[in-house]
Image (cartoon, rainbow, N blue to C red):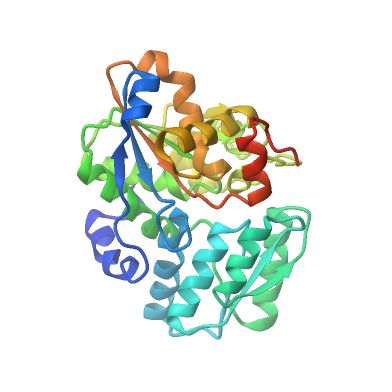
Amino acid sequence: MKPLFTLEELDAVFPVVRQIVPETPAYAWPLLQERFGLEVVVKHENHTPIGAFKARSSIVYIQKHIDAHGRPKGVVSATRGNHGQSMALAARLLGLPATIVVPEGNAEGKNRAMQAFGAELVIDGRDFDVSKITAQKIAEESGYLMVPSFHKNIVLGVATYALEFFRTHRDLDVVYVPVGMGSGACGLITVRDLLGLKTEIVPVVTEKAPAYRLSFDAGKIITTDTAGTFADGMACREPVQEAVDILASGANRVATVSEDEVAEAIRVLYADTHNLAEGAGAAALAAMTQDAASLKGKKAGVILTGGNLDEKAMQTVLSGQTPVL
């Protein structure tokens, strides 16, 4: 299928992204190699001003809207946290008011961070997909620009991390990446193809939020009634068709991890790299762990997409338990 964007388009947005995000490190941690028997390179997207890869996305989406249509009255979106922080930070940089809708029971740390960036927070809905409907209503009533979680220009901004990663580690045999709405995985697949690399991309979902795997396997959109995972950045019930199409064309499979496996991966990352990962941020390592025996002698990449784990969940995980919603 036709790529979402060209390499020239991707290079062109780096100055926009660099207003917010410097190049993030990618380290091959020796303790991970000792543990798993293979070289494991961690792309540290937890090292951004919002602690997550999404810092790269909203600034590109909003700036491209401004270039094409002028400045909006404000911006609005729905989120479980990292997308909202990205939007709030971008809006502050661009001098725009921002309204962000989150579901009930959303991570308190992420809520406070969005407000600290200057956004107005609206709490509505039992999950992200319900909050998204509320955000769309606010956009219609206020005239604000609705910033989606998945769009070509969202993926374009996110994909700058993929280009950084592949330019410094062109010899990766496989890269594991969590799937929320799909921008991170779609960015990796697109950049890999643009560079002509043979790296396998393995998107990852959790057992409690399997909609993207179900859709991938069925070849059509499959929605679920719930997505109750503590890896809140992966809590999707309604996949995006365009994202499913890109995964179908660029990945051989979608891996599934359990809540316990995600919690253990958080502990491993903390022990071996001294980095704190949120649930979604640890899901890639959890999936790689499943495959470790068959990866001996190879070079694997894992995307640590974010480190925004609430203190209570952190204490639960580091005590050897798994958070329960």
